[in-house]
Amino acid sequence: MAWQILVLVIIGSIELTGATRVITMEKKIIIYSADNCPWCRKLKDFLLDNSVEFIEKNVNLDHEAANEMITKSGQQGIPVIDIDGKVIVGFNRDAIEQELGL
Amino acid sequence: MADVIYDVIIIGCGVSGFAAAIYSARFKLNTLIVGKVSGGTINNAKEVENYPGFKSISGIDLGDRIRDHATSYDITLKETEVISVEKNKGGFTVRTKKEDFSGRCLIFATGTAHRKLKIPGEERFHGNGVHACALCDGITYKGRTVAIIGGSDSAAREALILSEHARKVYIIYRGNDIRAEPINKKRVEDNQKIEIIRNTNITEIMGKGRVVESVMLDKEYKGSKVIALDGVFVNIGHVPLTSLTHSLGVKLNEKKEIMTDTEGKTNVAGVFAAGDCTGFFWKQAITGVAQGCTAAYSAYNFLKR
Ligand SMILES: Cc1cc2nc3c(=O)[nH]c(=O)nc-3n(C[C@H](O)[C@H](O)[C@H](O)COP(=O)(O)OP(=O)(O)OC[C@H]3O[C@@H](n4cnc5c(N)ncnc54)[C@H](O)[C@@H]3O)c2cc1C
Image (cartoon, rainbow over all chains, first blue to last red; front, side, top):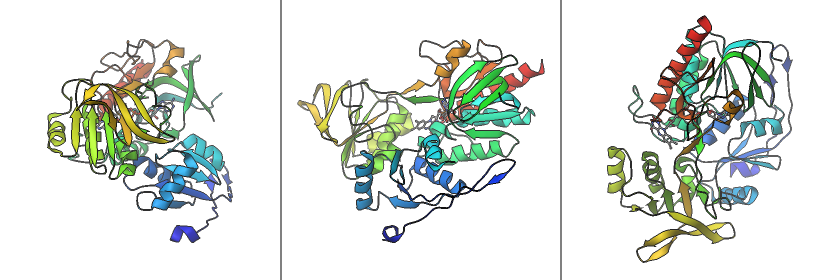
C-alpha cells in the first residue's frame, strides 16, 4: 500500500506577524482517521493550514492500521496522531502545536 | 501585559461564540474570540435537521460555515485554551498558555463537557470500549454489540448512528420512555437493531485486559443482570464549563450554569454569557446562536454608555 512505502519528511512553514519565519521540521507524522469523523477533519484541516505534511491511515478500511493505532495509543478512539513516536489521542491542538513547535 | 485592548473578548468558539462575534464585528467593536476548537459541540452532530435555512447539514459543516461567516469580518480568532480570567483596571485579562489578552468586556460561550457515569470500569476502559461520541468512535464497532446509556434526543440519535455499524444496539435508560423528538423516537422504534432497556441503570463496565465484555445492570433484563457487549457510549447529558468565571464572582445556578437575564447579562458588569454554558433551559445550536447575538448587543450597549 502507498503509505507503507511512503516515508515523508515534512517541511512546515509558518508566518508570524511582522517577520516571516520559516520553521523546518524533519518529523514523520502519521494520522489514524476514518471517513465522516469530524475531529479527524479538524485535525487534517489544522495540519494542512500549517503546511504540515502527513501520512493518513484509514482505520476503517485498513485493519492493520487499526491494530497499529490500538497498539500505539492503547485505545481505539480516533483521530490519533503520531509525531515521531509521540502519540496524541484526539484533536488536542495545544499539545500538537507544542510537539510541532508551531 | 497585552498591547491591544479589545472591546469584547469572547471565550469559546462554538456556534454561540461565533454568532456573538458576527454581531460584535458588525457593531464595529474590536473583537477577539478565543476557544479550543472552532465549532465546538455541534461538530459531534452527524446531521442537523432543525437549523433554519438548512434542511439537513452535518454539524461540522454548520460549525465551519458559522466560523467562516464570523472570520469574514475584521475579528481576531485564537484557537487555544484559556487558563484563567481576572479583572483588571479597565476591564478583564484573559490568560492562555501562550499569551494574555485584555478586553473591556467579556462574553462567556464556553459550552459543556460530557457528563460521566462515575461507575467502576468507566475510567479503565475510557477510549477503549467506553466512548462519548458515536460519530467519532462508532465506526470501530462494525458488526459488534454496543449500548448507549441515556434517553435524550441526542442519545436516540447516537443509537441510530451506531446502528449503521453495529450488529445490535441497546439503549439503556433509567427512565420509562426515551425523551427523543417524536421524529427520532419513531426512527428508533422502527430500527430492528435497536432494543431499549427501560427503568434500568448500569452499575459497572466489565472486561478483560483492555477489552470490554459486558455491563452490569441494577435489575434483571431477560433473566440476567449482565449484558454481553463490546462497547458503551455514554450520553447522559452535559456539565457546563464555567469554572473560569469563579475568579470574577459570576453567579451560577445549582447546576453550575451561568445565570443571565434575558439580555445575556450576568451579575457582573461587563460580563455576558451565551449558549450551553448558561442556565437557559433549551440547549440547541439555534438557541445558542440567538443568545450569542443578544449578548453581543448587550456588550455593545454596555460599551456605548
Ligand atoms: C451529538 C449531538 C447532536 C446535537 N444535535 C443538534 C442538532 O441537531 N440541532 C441543534 O440545534 N443542536 C444540536 N446539539 C446541541 C448543540 O450542539 C449545542 O447546543 C451547541 O453546539 C452549543 O454551542 P455553544 O457554542 O454554546 O457551546 P459549544 O459548542 O460547547 O462551544 C464551547 C466552546 O468553548 C470552548 N471552551 C470551553 N472552555 C474553554 C477554555 N477554558 N478555553 C478555551 N476554549 C474553551 C470549547 O472548546 C468549545 O469550542 C447536539 C449536541 C450533540 C452532543
